[in-house]
Length: 94
Image 1 (tube, rainbow, N blue to C red):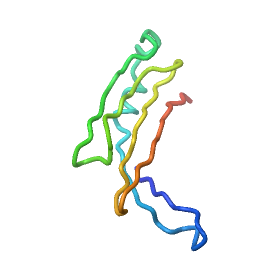
Image 2: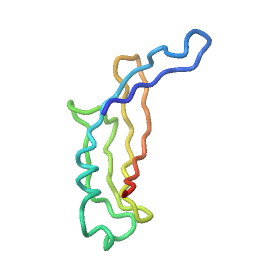
Image 3: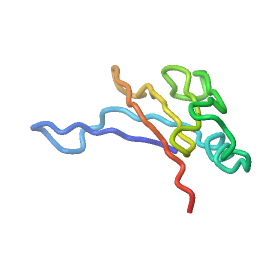
Image 4: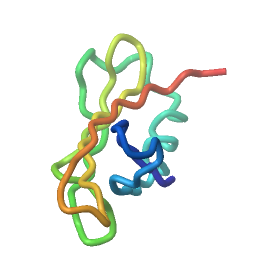
């Protein structure tokens, strides 16, 4: 999945500010686990470490919060001088 960020200034609305990618496969796999209802609130289920293959600025944790699988992450933007974006993913069962 690729995330692009644009600024809102007086020039144009689509000035590119950078991009970042992250892999959601582990997040989806954890969300499909059957034992999650028995997990204690705040339990970290998986951890992703920054490496050359991802845009993570720091470790990202997938945890059980308020009866949901949640992942917090900070992504370092590429193709730009500097910048980060903070994301929080929630799995919504359908």
